[in-house]
Image 1 (cartoon, rainbow, N blue to C red):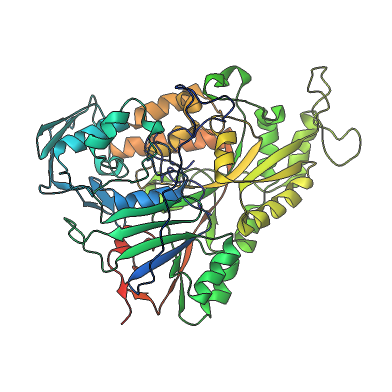
Image 2 (cartoon, rainbow, N blue to C red):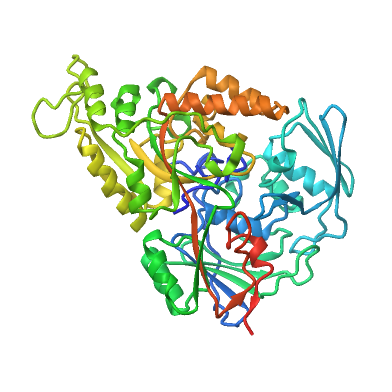
Length: 565
């Protein structure tokens, strides 16, 4: 279900995140390979027999990672692997707090502009080379978010900011520390490196990377900070959610992190299977995005096609769609009550950052029909589908029939699409449903703008600032802005929030941006779903299930579980 991680977040600087957050996906391969347009890398390593040891953990996926390169990857599965293989300055705990990883101590100047970090000594990368402050400074400079970064000695890193920024620890979460002796060769072409070996310094190291079938990691026995109780982690890709449920029933996998809500009740009665539900470590929002880019803003040099239906550029149409969307039906029938109605791109799980004062568009199909009638979108031929106004342009009388794309196969999205199609049919809107792979939907979306409507999930970090970039004008060419939305007032507020260190003033900025995006109907946020996961009780014990946030896939659980004796 998790399509993207901020960006996602989870994920969401141009170079940090992903979902829906992130470095751009590769453009369509329309030309012969050249130096400027290289062929896509082979994203797999030669497979070897998988282990069957009782200390090997098997995790089920419905889709594999999209890339082993942190500067390309956008999907949550890739970031699950990155968190295991790479070290970071800080890590997020299931309790919602930050804990030091590479950082031994830190100091900040009185004006908040100079940060000095002491790095643990004696650390090695997986290939045996030492990790020093020079690697840290090199990596942070690659991400390009901060100002001047330099290593003053082998264990000290200094970050000099032009202006203070809020929540430094949160901004450092997903800046993975890479070996300079490898990545320096790609400093000016970060997206061309296949990175199949994924040399890092985390508690697990890469063994096999088979993108569409499985990924195998093995534990680092002499890690500087963590001592896993298991020998291997194997992430196994399954055809769909039903196959995933069958796999944990049969004992073919030990844990699944995306359990379909409709399967939770029946699986809870399964012998040796425990189903757990809770607030995600990275709170999520399910969104419907509209291709509303102005043709003048089309990033053609970056592969932009900009083929979106022109009606979606009309706010009246988007408002009508919002009034025709009954969010409670999705929560009741798909989530079985395990979620809250969505309003903005900041989920309820992020507490004060969430603007609870926004009045959502009420579900009112009658009002939606009135809005479309008054705007001139009529069903002139009586086929049940409205058309564009007959104003004499080349789009006159074009039906309001939209391409509706999702990542599949997915029982979750199939059910969601069926409900939404029924709701929007009531106001004369038709959907042509397109099930797409993760690769094709990214190319179509960002920055291709070769779509009408997409539905997918974002994971949001406890530091929500970067998620607002998905509506920033400057991110239209980078793939981070998914919709092509552009609002100068929003852009100004977004620039200011990055440097506002007064919590109350910053919250005011974030709340106002949420209100602007909601009023402009940049997207429809359907709901904030809880996380539903399952694990085999007869295989491993020690999973973290009693913390404020649930994330069995997180390294914090995986490094402490141990085989059942």
